[in-house]
Amino acid sequence: MCGIVAYVGYRQASEVIIKGLKRLEYRGYDSTGIALVNGGLNVYKKKGKVSELETYLKGMDLNSHIGMGHTRWATHGEPNDENAHPHYSATRNLAIIHNGIIENYASLRKELTRKGHTFLSETDTEVFIHFIEDIYEKEKCSLDEAVRLALTKVVGAYAIVVMSFENPNMLIAARKGSPLVLGIGKGEFFMASDATPIIEYTNEVVYLNDQEIALVDNGKLTIKNVANLPLTPYIQTVDMELEALEKGGYDHFMLKEIFEQPRSILDCMRGRLDSASNRLILGGLREYIKKLVNADRIMIVACGTSWHAGLVAEYFFEEFCRIPTEVEYASEFRYRNPIIREGDVVIAISQSGETADTLAAIELAKSKGAIIFGVCNVVGSSIPRFTHAGTYTHAGPEIGVASTKAFTAQLTVLNMIALIVAHTKGTITEQKFHEMLVEMEHIPSKVERVLKQNDKIHLIAEEFKDVHNFLYLGRGYNFPVALEGALKLKEISYIHAEGYPAAEMKHGPIALIDNEMPVVFIATKDSSYEKVVSNIQEVKARKGRVIAVITEGDKLIPSMAEFVIEVPATHEALMPIVSVVPLQLLSYHMAVMRGCNVDQPRNLAKSVTVE
Ligand code: F6R
Image 1 (cartoon, rainbow, N blue to C red):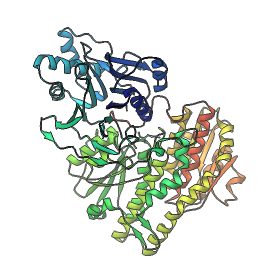
Image 2 (image 1 turned 90 degrees about the vertical axis):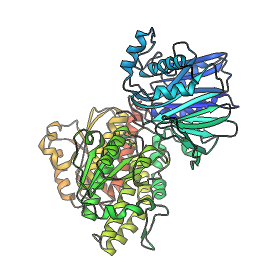
Image 3 (image 1 turned 90 degrees about the horizontal axis):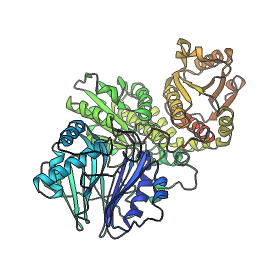
Image 4 (image 1 turned 120 degrees about the horizontal axis):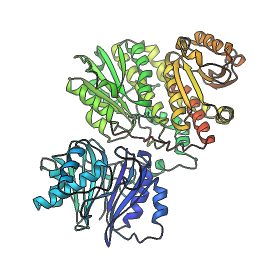
């Protein structure tokens, strides 16, 4: 949610910043802006994407070695030029970029208006920089001290960078609740919402913690906290390949990420699972494994696609570990005074590791004494730092806004956790444990086989691209896959889609079925296969158009369905990792055919860092 990037050093700041903003555009793309010290402190901003700002900047003199930029996902105020960041202070000597929400901005704005301040935008951010300047002038202190004093008074979440005309070698950054990474090069510094704009210049980074303020002044970095305590920067090395951030010949990141899945699933198991030696190890779990094995209940908190992964995991934990499991929307969990008892374990799932609702749910569960495990993709993000233990999914950077490879990696990790717990607890036989390990090793090649059907799926997409509604039905392990298929379609193609447990259809959704309604059945051969076949017949009887994801070699469903997509057989617990792939491709092709911006769907942002 909003991307921020800043630079000071020997390069042309505008070039580093524009490139960085393009990498961060997945976080929001309502408007874009940059600030440079070139003659004065100059702000250039525009509604729309980074490319629109680039067009606007063509031919301008942007010579500057210091600057900052922002790509916005609107919270306060509609997306327009005025509300775009950076924002100036009253004297225009200071400017700020901000990711987050200042909750007490209305009262601060009132107070400043009384003092004669006028505001050009409707944003909380503009109020923030006016407030900083007000303190700076009143206290006659250093700018970083004014920022610190302001931070002691604001309520809410922020990652900010502040620049000033008077100090053209200085950047001040701070964070609370929104991510901020500092890159440390030779004679240059970078600041960004994540490491992606930084890694082509340096892999030495400092992840700023909540309530910390970083000051880069004349080539020197110092860090302190909001309570004014000096801190030693903890420099880490990021391990990320630049090519992971490029499209690599694909038309869209989403397509690249769908096709990367055989590799990302393998990466997720690498060094952790080896069927030949019957070995399954997750280092992050070791210390707390007893808590999980003895858990009276597992509560899973997550949002969106990660929540769907949680729903699949509910089946794993109950089937293999015999532990009662509940899956909660993180956003609801925190608002209903949940009962958490000693012996409960909470698992938080998140691709970005920054989702505000999931973080808040973790905070609440922690305050009630729960042990929290994280399953996250982005290394160094907030959730892995706030949980007691956890496991990374190692799917690599996911840039397309619609989650694909992160989902299959989450399922892989959750399945591994369940198997380790079940094995330790003795709720799975040795033979079954071994069979599952062997089968997991086959999953990447099975996903590869599904990807080979891309052309066929393209043809199906052609047939349905102009419809207005879609229904997705599945049972058991494939029910969450139905939800995920529907979410993928609606978020990138804007076609209305619903996912249901297949048997629920007759309790209402069946009324929607006529000869124009496409119904996708995830109907692989598992314990509920016969029942799903009956559900297909019910749809056929009402002239619905059936598209079915079936197990290779199934002879029955092809005689009933208008279109079938075959997937290789696997254990039913692992089937979601395979059966979701054709649904990702179907939604991708339909969205492209409808002219939608697949990687940056309207109104969405990849990392939802606001409540
Ligand atoms: C859907 C999608 C979202 C995210 C959700 C949670 O394709 O990407 O529904 O799954 O916003 O995000 P994370 O997993 O980063 O917590």
